[in-house]
Amino acid sequence: MLSRKCKYAIRAVLFLSVECKDGCKLKGGREISDSLKLPHAFTGKILQQLARQNIISSAKGPGGGFYLSDDNRKKPLIKIIEAMGDVSVFSSCGLGLSKCSDTQPCPIHDSFKTCRDELLQLFSTKTISDLSEEIVKSNLSLVR
Image (cartoon, rainbow, N blue to C red):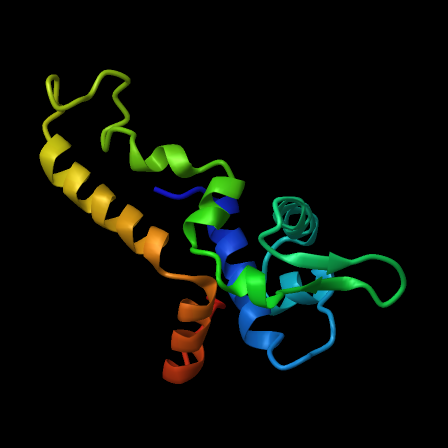
C-alpha cells in the first residue's frame, strides 16, 4: 500500500527518534542510510524532503545533520505519509480501479475500506514519539 519512499521515510524518522534522545549529536544522511541499509542518494532526498516539510529538523554546515525536536516527535505518522505524497492510499481502490465507490464498489470494496480506514486511524493517532517508545520498550528493529 505505502510506497517504498514512504516506508523508508517512516523508518528514517523513527531511527532519528530512537537514536537522538536526550541531546545526542546530529545524524548524517549516510549514517542513517547505512544504519537502516537503505540506498544513500534516495535516503538523502527523502531526508531533505522531510526537513523541508518540518517533519524532522536539520542543521547545515560542517558537523550538520538531522535530528528531531520535541515538536517533531509530537507529530502523528500521517504527517510523514502526507509529506511523501502517499495520502491517496487511504482513498484508493484495493484493486486499483479508477471507478470504485460506495455506489459502484469493486469486489473487495467493503472489506478493503474497513482495513484502509483502520490504518488511517492508526497513522493519524500514533505519534513519532509513541512508536519510538514502543521500539525501545520492546527492542524492535528498523532494519531488515
